[in-house]
Image 1 (cartoon, helix red, strand yellow):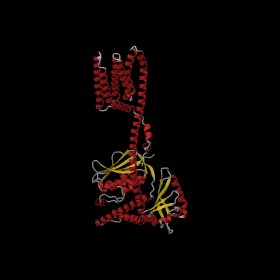
Image 2 (image 1 turned 30 degrees about the horizontal axis):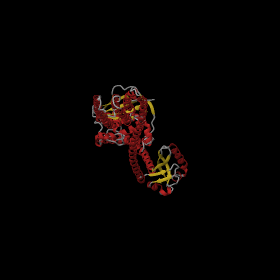
Image 3 (image 1 turned 90 degrees about the vertical axis):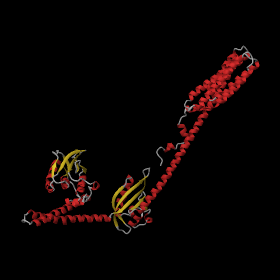
Image 4 (image 1 turned 90 degrees about the horizontal axis):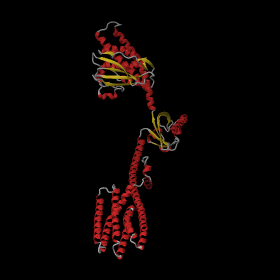
Length: 595
């Protein structure tokens, strides 16, 4: 049940991590978060140390400067606290991580510069003990900043530079040789601390990347587990469906009224259903493993059946409606219609063949008897009926003398009904010839306008009986079609007679001709009651009649349209109908143009 993309979906999580590069913005956001999380501790620590330093340095003649510096520290502390509060109150600080990092860098520079100012101003103006205390304090602030700002070494470098460089300048210009030498060491001390901060920065970056990788790995595993769970559910559902389908197929084969076999590719029987056992007289255990070509078919047909089997296995295409004689266990030969369906796997190999067999011996016998009946109907009924009709026509024409009015009415009715019976017999014969494939056509290129004019002339007398006129709508174009002349006249006669029968007295049945999608369309337009909606789907069926009482009144067999449809299909044409806007129906036929 897996889709083509399942292999990608189920790839190893490590591969998923490698395929997705790290997002620098997420790492930057994590770094900023870490810096701001340590900011409260730095603010408190710096403020406490500043208070201690102000207290120790309060004596002397620079008390105003100390007070100024203390006020500066307090102002900076408040500003840093406001910065922390603003960061925490920001709706999406990760999206603005670069801006918050710049503000933090400015804060660190201001903090470092404040302590650098303390070193530059207070160191020269105090006693040796206070100088040692101040130097120790500044060194501690520089070293402590490593842990505070190591997540971003550039910020630490800015912060430490604000402390070290002013103090270095003071020591270098103090005039004391020892202080001058210490001034030379301070940049090295600064560089070492910056290097340590850089290294810690790399360690933190690695940690952040690992954390994100682990997070993505967890997400991938979670998604993978969901997908696996979903696929397991689908597989379980598929398994149930396959089992249900298998049970349905097994039940279908078991209850099927036709014989069903399963053969392996070599033609050996695997399983059979009860209908096959009843048809051939073998039990399933007797047929299992036996060669079907040798067991089920006469010896004379074995080689032909084996050749057809090999061709089917090679082409992997099903075979349908194959007729072949088969042999029952008792030696009786029967004629069966076979359908063979090879089952092919993904490697295009035939794994088995489902064979369905249906005994059509009785069907063939019935068809033979029907053909004999049709032949008998043709010779034994049509010939004497033609003689009867001819005799009645002679009597009605007055050749044998004038008849009494009542007698003439009876003979006229007899002639008319005899003609209807002959038409019915001819229609039945036509249908049987068409369905048995014995009807042959002689297609030729003929002028359609001439044929339509001829059909109107031949059917005008019939239309006069219903007081209906037959006419063309304007001049017919001189076009040619390819059709059987005799059968096309039969089709036109059927359509014109139907239109005349079902049109009201005094109306006109019009015939039109037009070119439609490569065909020549002939339309017969009547003014009748139209086709009932319930009758439209079966109008071209055999013995199809919409209103039996009305049909009996008008006459007809219900076979004419069915014959027209089949004849047109044999000639490569079509037939159809449509309602007329002003009432009535249009029957049209499409005839192919000559190539």
